[in-house]
Length: 454
Image 1 (tube, rainbow, N blue to C red):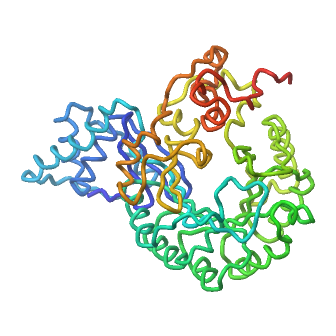
Image 2 (cartoon, rainbow, N blue to C red):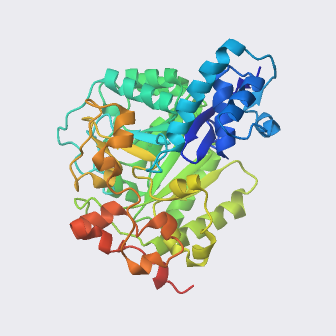
């Protein structure tokens, strides 16, 4: 018998399928033959001969390169005895699962790769860069049992990870129970916190969790942190240091707004000195008009920062297990020299590298409303609520989640651009906010692709 490695998620998709490593997030794309064979293997409880027979009966090539999956430790062991009385049932189940997905006309992933949940929008700070506009507005909060059922459904669908945001998520009254249950489910999870006023019970749960990594928001080791977040950076370090002392993996995140490069270098040096292996710097999206005094950086500014950060890390820490990543939507528009290198993408890569909204992720508000991206928070009223519909139903059928999916841009300039295969004229939320129902006639005003001379 072959045994599936539980460290991998196997999903059938319209283009074949994918295998995802739960720990390092490496993804292996599968063709139709491999997806059918693995499905039959799963239903036959690892019977390789049965899987080959089923694959052949359904009209696919049964000669699978099995060693590929063994070498990657997706499968282990072998036993060839076929169970005749189960063959018909396995054929039926495999056909039903695979062919239904293969014949999808909407070319949508079977499930999101990530869901983001906002258990509460309440917050004890007022960060100038916050993406959520309706924080501290008394928005209804669904109970913890519902959140647990949502995460369980996501896990069963093959969702890779959960991101817990807010507000300040540790202020959710039932956060301890939620974290315990999520860790028990075993899905990869991050919780992003400002680290201030976190209960000791919550800290202990995070320290002892196997599947939850806390990410702490930190902007600078000087007065800029208080200006941007409303709290002294030393107050945040108290919680971070407590977790480091207990050997808990933590990560740090900043948002690029008013900081200098030296501010980021200082955080990098501190991370390395304290054994923190991952630090991320996110670009800022000015979708929340309530934020004031924020220096809105261009994509080209972000490119310069990225290159300088990379050079700094390589020059000082190239032999250290440390990663500093810069992250954000549409950053590729600052790299015109790569425009023609992106033309040949697999079907999965087209989803993975394009706008994630409704394609690889969805976000669930504290009251259960579902958004393709939180940037739509004040633009369109949600049509799906997780309290009245299942996650899978909303993912595949909700009007709001799917309304912008793959609608071709009408911008002539963009149709000639090599990045259009993943960009489609840029952020839908930004364009909808600026141009309303005529959004499809205009490209993202932040795009700098054809304005750069390098």
